[in-house]
Length: 289
Image (cartoon, rainbow, N blue to C red; front, side, top):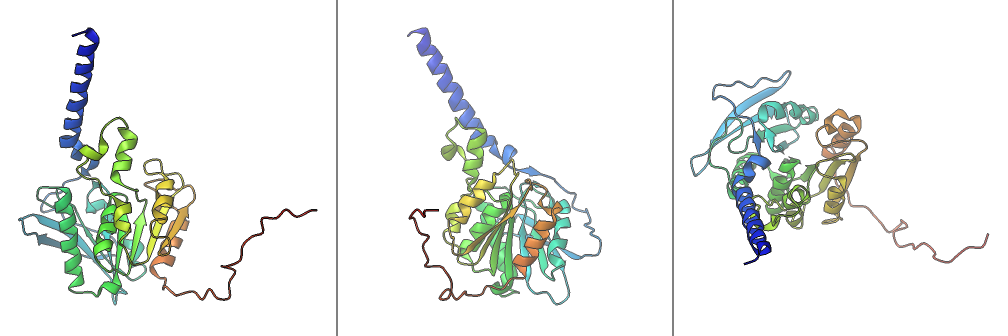
């Protein structure tokens, strides 16, 4: 065998070794959990909050928070991103309680006080379990699903198999495979990704109003991903642009809070298009000056 043949074999072996390593170690790149002691106490100023622990059928414990208001209009199930724990994410509950909505958050397995072996299937099952607990006490027409970054994909999945009032996606990705391909373009992403989270596929089956919020300066998940997502179910979707917003700072823009208020307090009304210009076509003929 020629030296070039040996080099080719070595390159292939290295390629396969890296692929296998990425398959088994990808959780270290996707998830950035913060773990909390069992006796850690949550405190938030001017918020009434109750901690809860739910045991799943495989013995895992899902730890979460329920932010309460008097005479709530409904409840927001807030699905957070891939980092930290609800200790920090809980600070964002005020953006919904100020509009008189209860907020329910939970930590994924391995985050905060939540336990259990994490997997794509387990996370989806856990979230449906929590959704069912809420649905047992609140009619679905009062449930809002809010997904932030990684949580947007899981929120889309929940909305695709349930009937919530609305779905709000904050800085969503088209699919996690697409995000991964940006960082490892030469690897067989579709084969090695154990958490593909195909947001676009799940959106096809969502039948409630879909609201997408994205910053124009998002370096991690480009704004164009939300533009693509908005075309999946265009008649149900509205895209909100935060000019200058990045991936982690939308809450620092006044426009974001204005948009959020308009979204969660909106009432979907059917528009009478009979007296609009919807059927009018622009002339393609040149007009002489």
